[in-house]
Amino acid sequence: MNIPFNKPSIVGKEIEYIHRAIKVGHISGDGMFTKKCNAFLEELLGVRKVLLTTSCTHALEMAAILLDIQPGDEVIFPSFTFVATVNAFVLRGARPVFADIRQDTLNINEKQIEDLITPKTKAIVPVHYAGVGCEMDRIMWIAEKHNLPVVEDNAHGLFGKYKGKYLGTFGCMATQSFHETKNISCGEGGALLINDPEYIERAEIIREKGTNRSRFFRGQVDKYTWVDIGSSYLPSDMLAAYLYAQLEEWQKIQSKRNEIWEKYKIALEDWAGLNGVKQPYIPEHCEQAYHMYYLLFPSLKKRQALIACLKEKGILSVFHYQPLHLSDMGRKFGGSPGDCPVTEDVSDKLVRLPLYYSLSDSQQEAVKSTILSLAF
Ligand SMILES: Cc1ncc(COP(=O)(O)O)c(C=O)c1O
Image (cartoon, rainbow, N blue to C red; front, side):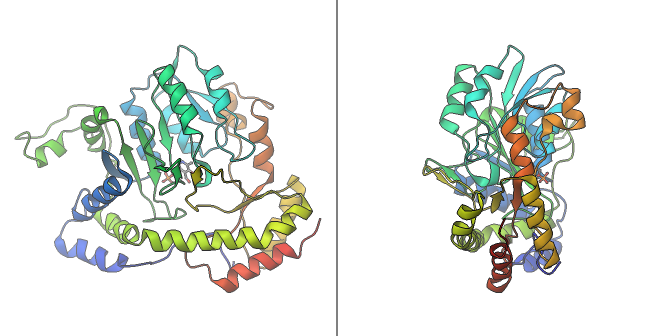
């Protein structure tokens, strides 16, 4: 493809910092750069504790362990999300309960959540789709009323805000992704954001193979030992070095993505109106993270026509999540067609356009003009 959907970029001191990590002689987990990333995110977002992880998937797995999810427990998710959001909890034995999404933001429909709560419900997991905040006032109100924890899957939403407050700071925990496709990346990586201090100590243990190694390194115990279940969720400090260089340049990255996003919006506005295509909707009270630019077509056929037309010009555009309640696993949990009609409809009609830091003006021009040449 001449214009890929995504491309990783060097934006600052990534290479220099990787060299430094090697020179310092600490390339396993929790070295100097991991600590810098954790502190950077804690300070900027105002989170009690940040722990870098090997992926967002692993941060979600940690959250499920920390909430003590047991076989038979129910957890509420949007059906329109990535498999990992749900699998992390299903791994502990949870039964997923799927809510549909809103027509406008494509986030979990908060109005459906309360009806899905049963005595077995143990958590609510909203996903800030495309880095646009879910209706957190309502979600937190429901959670408090029913005494349920909220874990925000904020894989898309780093630096996004809802009513002036950073996404990832509402629930007792939140998870970030630093996968290659995300705004800030180190190839594969993630973080667990802990807002409720009750979970901090156990989170450190779970992340360190179920040992109290972190306490040992802080001199709080004189030897470390096996104290709980856990796994190895620490990224190498070489990855953290790459990530820290990206975090240092976060404003530069966000402003470039903002610029590309706005250019798509302005250029495609009239064409979209004429062809019954919807552009992303950002509520006034949300500051989006500029993670994704998508279009919603009136039909699957028209969406596929656009993907094919762009492909002919060497431009890769991609659809997104398939409804989880209709997947093989979703059906095993009782999902059937019609359960989440908006999710079922949107998954057939959505397409994502190339959006990455190094996308040049002429490349974006090629994407826009190819789309504008299409009339249905
Ligand atoms: C909503 C959501 N949650 C979780 C993940 C998993 O992220 P990771 O690849 O860092 O495990 C993704 C991946 O794109 C995602 O879109």
